[in-house]
Amino acid sequence: MRIAIGADHRGYIMKQRLAQILSDDGQEVMDMGTSSLDPVDYPDYARAVGRAVVDGHAERGVLVCGSGAGASIAANKIHGIRAGLAHDCYTAHQMVEHDNANVCCLGARVVGLELAREIVRVFVVAAFNGEDRFQRRVEKVAAIEEEGR
Image (cartoon, rainbow, N blue to C red; front, side, top):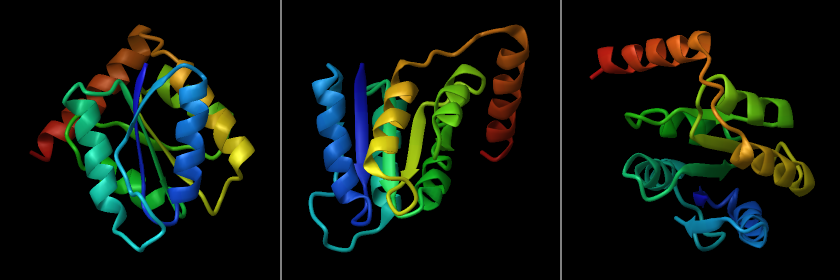
């Protein structure tokens, strides 16, 4: 699977480590930045990851900022992105299985590297369930997104 990964300066170190873990697991990783600890704005990297996903260059995205909240908010502004904040493994797979999430957001100041590793691993291998009730809900979310256009 091709994964676009990005972070601001607060998530830079975790992003670097997660990118290596995903690559070692056999995933194709697209590093969308940042490339240092110098202060940057998280919306720029949320945009880069989100665009890579909606434009079909990546199948899923992973974003890391200090709390994960800002990255999630910014990514969800992109039409077609369904980003979720996951600080546990259950949420990481459930948001794909039930909500067809395509971007996972993490807080580098909230979770440690080992938990983050498990979160992204379960996020990447999870698949949308596709049951009628879940499909209906995803379609309702898409309709809300269209109202805002």
